[in-house]
Image 1 (spheres, rainbow, N blue to C red):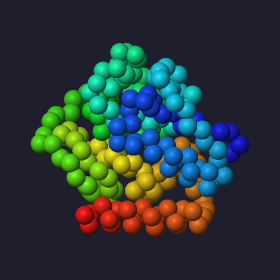
Image 2: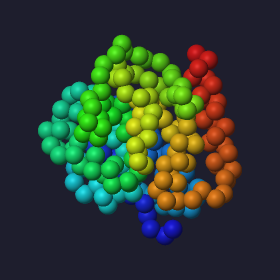
Image 3: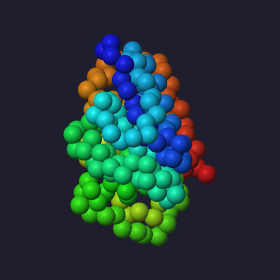
Length: 195
């Protein structure tokens, strides 16, 4: 693949509360190991998302979201249209809560606040810091919606692989770098649950 993939970091100064943009670095590095160039593009408008191969909607504070929605009143509709088109994305925590009503027709409810390292039913891990009753991790079309921070892809390289494959890229060869990252991710997962 000779084309440079474009990875969108939506409102990076607003939506990176827990290092969620590290997920883009994980994808970019994984793609590099596959011989594919990927550019991380800071984006401050949800118009024209279709030109991107991947979109990250990170986690933000209430004040950050108020500012994003003031700057881009079509944000929710444009992100949902991108997801429904079958393109690949990762939506984290407060981003999940923001788009759920438009995406699923149901607004996420509130439960007792949880702040802990969590393991999903699928075995994925990350830091859960939320009072949302949304699923900790779920797929919708080619998009992962998760309450896990972290960045989640650093602790779950198999999830990064699946996102890459859903972008239409085959992972044929597992290089030494892929093996090393899996070793480090497993060590990180183990340490998180030991403390």
